Image (cartoon, rainbow, N blue to C red):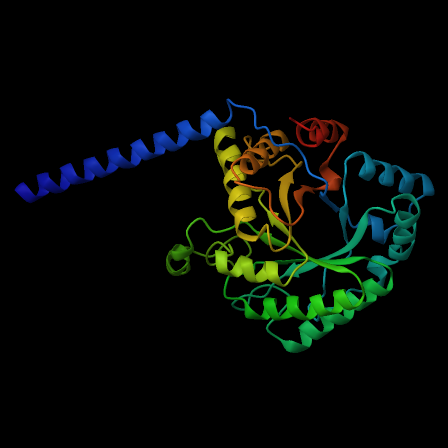
Length: 341
C-alpha cells in the first residue's frame, strides 16, 4: 500500500502547487486594480452600430445627433450592421433600403468618420451553420455583395464571420480577394475576430476533448493562434478583437484579461495593421464582473506594459452603439479619452 500513500502525497503536493499558483495569479490580478494606469486614449476608435441605420428611415436631426455623438467620443470608424449574409453570400436589398441616405448624411455631418458596412454570418463548420465559405461560389457572391455596398458609398467592408478556426484557409482566401477589391476602390477591409488563444499548442487537445458549443458547430474555442492572427492582420487594414464576453467571476480577473490580450495582440500585430480592442457596454445576464470601466482599465494596463507604442494606429472598439447610454459615454470619455501625463 506504500505506493498508494506516495501517490496521495504527490496528488496533495500537486493540488497545493496549483492552488498556490492560482493564489499568486489572483493576487497579481487584484494588485493591478490598485494602481492607476498612466496610458490614455488614442486618436482612432471604432463603434459597432445597429442595423436600423441602414434598414429604416431617419430624420436629419437624428443623423446630426449621431454625427455629434461620434465627434464628441472620438470615433473614427463606424461598423453599420448591413447584413447578415444569406446562405448564398447575398444580402436582400430590402435590408438596406436607407443605406445610401445614411452614407450621404454621414458625409455631410461627420466627414471625418469612416462609414463601413458590417457584414457577417454564422460560418458553416462540420455541417452546422449557414454560410459555407469553403464553396468558391459563395465566396464569389460575398464579393459581389461587397461591391454593392462600396457602390453605395461605404468606405470599408467589416467582416464578422463566426466561428473562425486557425486552419480556415477559405476565410484567408476571402480576405485576400476582398482586400484587392477594397484597395481598388480606396476603401478599407476590417475584420472582427476572437481573442488570441492562451496556449497555441493546446488547440489539438481542445479539438479532441471539448464538446460542441451553443450553436452546435463549435467543437473547441475558435481562437486564432499567433500565426493565424498574423496572417489575418497581413490581409486586413484593421483588426477588431472581440475581447468581450469573458465570463470571469471577478473584476480583477476581467481587468487582467483585457490587459493581457491588449499587450499580446499589440506586440504581435500592432506594427502590421490598425487594431481595435473590443470593449463592452452591454450588461451580461450571468456576468457581474465584466463592464466598461473594468475593460478600459485593462486595455490601459496592457498599453502600459508595452516597451513602445505600435507602429500602426490602435484604439478600442465599443460594442455596441445600441447598448451604450449617456452614462456609458460619459464614463468612456473620462476613462479613455482623458489624456494622462
